Image (cartoon, rainbow, N blue to C red; front, side, top):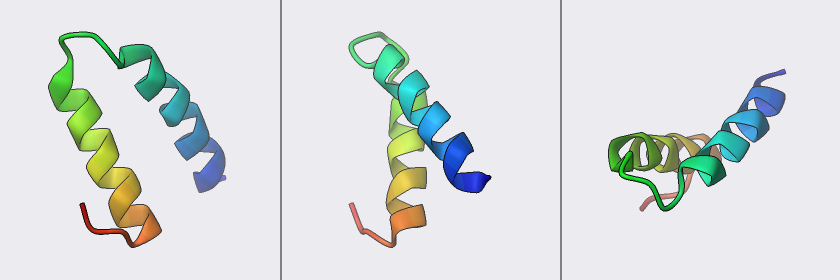
Length: 40
């Protein structure tokens, strides 16, 4: 369930790529990195 939401958010993230909404992209990347246990 959590994974499904993550994947949907990832689609949103791709949609926002290349826009001015840098904060949202940055926050999402941090979230995914934390979720996967990866340091950025």
